[in-house]
Length: 169
Image (cartoon, rainbow, N blue to C red; front, side, top):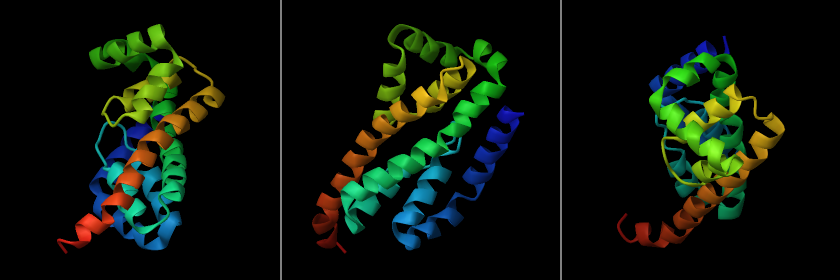
């Protein structure tokens, strides 16, 4: 059941992603909600790094990194819950098996690294974490730490590029 809900939610967010952009007008709270929604998709790309980049150009980049990373971490619960509900699916997918081997070898460091580096594989790590019953109390802090690094870099890049962009606008 969790798997079906996560997939349907992902499809709806992907289809209506243009509508969610209006949330940026609500400041840091809007960025928080956007990052939850953007990370609630499974495997379908929604550019949350762009939210952090643009948010960093407008608001305090440290606050943007904290807010976006917290929202992103909450959003990643859909992948985790899909894994809880779709454990049998994990055994059949070749890409998931590759990430599972990394997790077997490196443990939570795999989740941290995949959360910290922009890549499409993090959703698979979340699914595996749920399917292998990694404690949510271990999963959430490690995801947040990785996301904080990633979104911190992008928000500070956005803050430092604002003057450069203004020259062309």
